[in-house]
Structures are given as C-alpha cells and as structure tokens.
Length: 317
Ligand SMILES: NC(=O)c1ccc[n+]([C@@H]2O[C@H](COP(=O)([O-])OP(=O)(O)OC[C@H]3O[C@@H](n4cnc5c(N)ncnc54)[C@H](OP(=O)(O)O)[C@@H]3O)[C@@H](O)[C@H]2O)c1
Image (cartoon, rainbow, N blue to C red; front, top):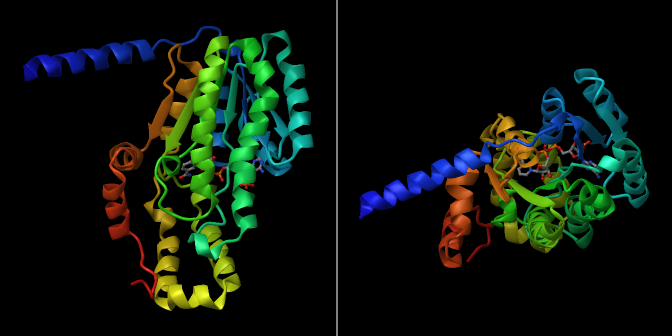
C-alpha cells in the first residue's frame, strides 16, 4: 500500500517536472516590464532576462540606478524612471511601454518594487507609518497593474507579483506584512479574473534575502526614529532591556539573510518563460521548510512558535 503511494507521488512529481520544463517560444520577441530595478531582485532579474535575450523594460526609482543598470546590460534593455506611489509617473511609464510594445502587447509585468520600513511593534507606529509602506507595496502594485493590464491582456501575458513569506504569516508589526497579505489577496482575485483572457498571474514568496529591504542599517535607523518619537507610556511598557535586545537583533539581520538572490529571480524567470508557470513560488529554505509549513498550522500552534521566539516587553505579564 505504502509502496504504491510513494510510487504515485514520485510519478506525479516527475510528470510535474517535465510539464514545468516546457519553455515558451519566441522569448526574444517578448517584452517584460519590471518595477524597482535599481537594486536587489529587480536588478538581478533585469540582467538575467536580458542575458536570456528577452526585451527588458526596466523601471528604476532613480536615474543613477537606471544608468548603472544600462552599463551592465545589452542595448536591448531600456530603462524608465518610475515611482509607483505617483499616478503621473505610472501614466507616463505606461505610455512609454505602449510605444515600445506596439501591437504585440506586454508579455510580462513584474511588480517587484517594495520597501520594508518603518517596521517594529505596532504600538510604536502611527497611521502615516503604515500608509507609507502600503502606498508602495500594495497601492503601487494595484495601480501599476491596472494601468498596464490592457497591454498584458493584448499579449495574453503574465503578471508576477512579489509577495513574501510575511504575506503568509505575520510575526512583526507595521505595514509590511499587511501590504504583503494584500498583495496575496489582490493576486488571487486577479488570477481568477484574468484566466478568462489567457493571462496568468504568479505570486513569488521569498524568505529572507540580503537586499535593501533587509538592510540592517536602514532598520536600525528606522527603529531609533520610532523609539525617539514613542510616548513615555510606550517607552515604559517596552523598556530599555527590550530596546537593547531589539536593536541587537536588527544589527545581525543582514547576517541571517541568504545572499543568493538567484533563488528568487529563477522563480520569477520561470513564471515568465515556462509554458506552465506555477501560481505560487516559495524561494529559500526558510520559506519552504519553516514559514510556509507554519502558515498551514492551527493558529494556536503558530502563535506558540512565534511567542517562544519573540522578545517580551519589559513590563509583560
Ligand atoms: N529581501 C528580502 O528578504 C525580501 C523577502 C521577501 C520579499 N521581498 C520583496 O522583494 C521585492 C524587492 O525587494 P528587494 O529585496 O530586492 O529590496 P531592494 O533591493 O530594496 O529593492 C527594492 C527596489 O524598489 C525600489 N523602490 C522603493 N520605493 C519605490 C517606489 N516608490 N517606486 C519604485 N521603486 C521603488 C527601491 O529603490 P531604493 O533602494 O532607492 O529605495 C529598490 O530599488 C520587494 O517587494 C520586497 O518586499 C524581499
């Protein structure tokens, strides 16, 4: 009985692997638009797809980032400046893309741009702190997608949304997890709606990787700002012991992150080039072996795991 079961799972895995290895034809004629290409995953993906011969339309936040990317890539790759929080910037970028893709439409849209600070305990924050992250990570994704959708539909193409394991489990305060849960929800409804038009939507859920988003100095600076601004009541509840351990944890955040960003960009590339992309990709051992399994646990068990691992405020009961 067990042998049959193992053989069945083995056969299913093999068939899935064979199916997923089938690649789209004429990749060199396909345009892919990627947001947040100044650094991190977006930057590596732009270079990776350029090497593969695809037509990369890379959106950068800064001219410096755009110039550095152009210097590292072929003449095929073109850049545009895009701030995903600004409607006029999105409208201009969409027009720029339209002029380049013509009647072919846009094959791939990768919503990658993102920020992670301010982050910290919810009580350290105000509404603007939450809004700052939601503006980039969630509303930015929604507005760019709605703007580019007619071009993607024309190509019967792909939308790839970068979420996070923090869109599956929420274990720290602030807007980041909320924004990524939102990206998951938006992507799920989009995938179902767009299936009627031959458009496929994939979600990428990375674990922790060493990039701008996980940069220790940025997190330390942001935590210091939040603490300095916190009310005397919050300072008393959390206390100096908590603060010291919290800051020490942030200092070593970089070291805990994986360096091989290709684990993530390979998922993005598969979602854009495979005939049969997955709906969800998890990237990194921490995502696959810990965070995603924990997301399926009953709440009381997940809570117990995070409770044991988390710092307690000085005045905790
Ligand atoms: N690194 C991780 O561990 C991790 C894990 C899970 C998910 N992610 C997600 O992966 C995506 C890429 O992040 P990353 O890790 O590669 O970090 P990153 O190196 O900081 O890349 C994010 C890029 O987005 C840009 N950006 C910020 N605000 C923007 C705006 N308003 N409009 C357009 N672009 C903007 C950033 O520019 P500046 O650098 O100039 O701000 C940066 O180039 C993000 O959505 C992030 O949430 C990262």
